Image (cartoon, rainbow, N blue to C red; front, side):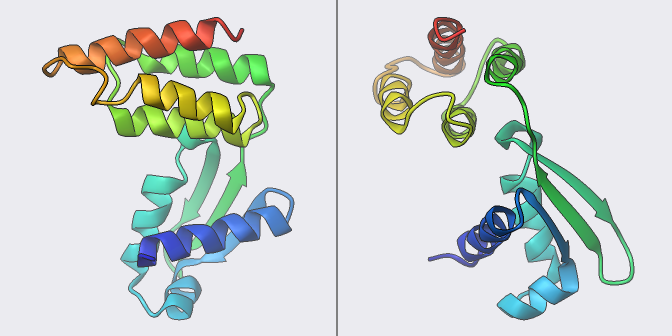
Length: 148
């Protein structure tokens, strides 16, 4: 397992154990995983984003305090937020993040998520870029609208 995955899993376990809010210090966490603080920054900035349903509050200096909170959003609002954020194109990685977020919030089941991912994969969308990402956005929006 990669270092980034270990850090992400540790933070997610903290969130689960503390009811959805975790307060960390970069240096302390970096020491725990024997890595540099910038590795912690990387994990937080790429895996604990608004798109994935997290609110991150950060203060620099003195070890770097970070507060990560799981956003609490009603299912219908979350669906509409994601539909509005998709735009005219979406890559597969962003599509995965959106659907994982919906699954994490129990808006869709893991089975529904996997079916949607299969239908939206690069292998299925036999188009060139940027048409592939545009078609994926259109399909994803239509799938999600049917859930509202």
